[in-house]
Length: 55
Ligand SMILES: [Zn+2]
Ligand SMILES: [Zn+2]
Image (tube, rainbow, N blue to C red; front, side, top):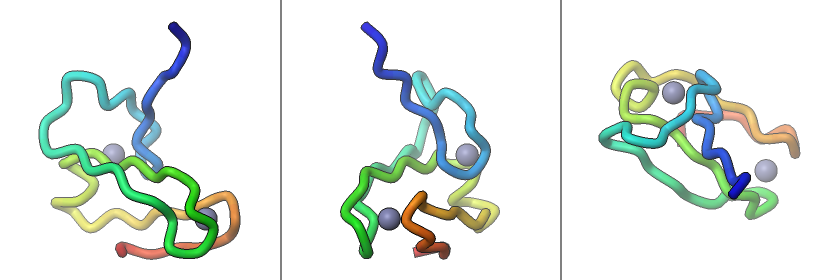
């Protein structure tokens, strides 16, 4: 298996992390993964399509 799941903000492997959210980019529908920590601190993310935000 080679489907590593990395937080889009901190690039950490989110396996075994709590509070992870997975959603689709509002712009390009690409899958976005954020870990609980980055959500808690409001870390920014940027999708490869150029979309950025805390939402
Ligand atoms: Zn993170
Ligand atoms: Zn996108």
